[in-house]
Image (tube, rainbow, N blue to C red):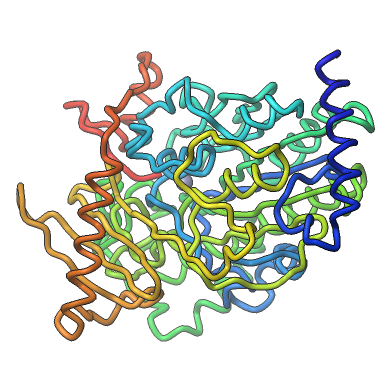
Amino acid sequence: MQGGRTRSLARLALAAACGALVLLGCQGGSSDDSTRLVLLLSVDTLRADRLGAHGGPAGLTPELDALAARSLVFTAAYAPASHTLPSVAALLTGRYPQELGVTGNLSKLPEESVTLARRFREAGWNTAAVVSNWVLRRASGAAAGFDRFDDALPQHEAARPMPERTAQETTAAALAALSQCLPTATERCFLWVHYQDPHGPYTPPPALRAQRLAIERERPDAEHRLPLLPGSFGTGGIPDYQVIDGHDDVAFYRAGYDAEIAYLDDAVGALLRGLEARVPRAAAAVVFTSDHGESLGEQDVWFGHGERLGEAQVHVPLWFTLPGLAPGRRDDVASLLDVRPTLEARFLDASDVPHTGRALLAPGAGEASSTVYLATLQGSRQPRVGVIEGDFKYVATLRDERNWDGRLTRRGDDAIDLTAPAPQIAARLRARLEALIRTHDAAPGVEIELDADDRERMRALGYLDDGAEPRPGR
Ligand SMILES: [Zn+2]
């Protein structure tokens, strides 16, 4: 406790200094001493454009829209990979998954990784996590740095033998975790909550699906029917883990996805109200994001993720709701790697612990822009890598052992190929991409040791063929 008292005194001194300097901009990026709770709130498989803040359907996400209205919203935020563990590893560490050797859902986050939770705990905060995706269970390494790590998955998914925890249960677990993480009024808590609901198979409450189905039936391709595919990839048809009662029409699944988001939204609202009952807004920070999106037919990929680097799969929400931070919007390119350095700069003492992201709230940061390195890693049968820089995006697909087919587009619009009309920009981004590969693709991967039950579960999910070839794409 001696250390805790020393840290408290240091915080008091810092607060006094900050108070004296507030007119000089101390609030802009230096250590924040009044915040007692930092909530990292992430949702699996939530594409940005389903949210009101990013042009989503009217009325679909009222609770999250209210959160966005009091947040700094990054409109051009990207996940570095389009499936779960690599992307979440980047979120927790501020490093590319390639740097960590976390290239698939069978990888393991190295035990020595510097994570947000470790950094907060070293600074004297209590730390807790509630995760509802089996891929993020303790064995994945995601528990590093957390005092408490709740990965209980009491429910079972509909179309595959997979445990999960639905949104209402996740909210209840998160509020219980908060009580343990903030046992007294003087302690501080870093809490990570990861919801799973928008991930397929889409099994929302029936009334919510019916509501969304009435809307989807009005769309011109509502009756479009698709083949039901035997594997977990969604190229040209519906992947097996998504199929419910033999449905093969687009409207049924689009409605299911949106209804899962509506269900999630309600549960997130309950979580935020529960937090506010215990911690006033002036002492609570929220970071809201997603690990990747979901294709709903873009590039002929249906109700899946992992194989592509299109906007549907890598454009994610990234919102900061911090005490004293003015709500608004920022259009500079950001990524999940930026969360750790941004929170460190704001809430922890200045650090020279290395990371690859950037502190988004540092003075002048809005005039800069991230370069984001994208890769499908083990999520794809056909490897894809890409780079986003400024207004442009370049994605390369491995054609054969050595040759990559590259394609330049304007960021935010995958439809129009600019490779031939803008060859100099394409060449510049290709060179940038090659440099990123040389710089970051260094670490050898470490894979989870699977017991017999895990192997069976992975195989049933399509993560693993009998030849032990990793499969995507959760
Ligand atoms: Zn995911």
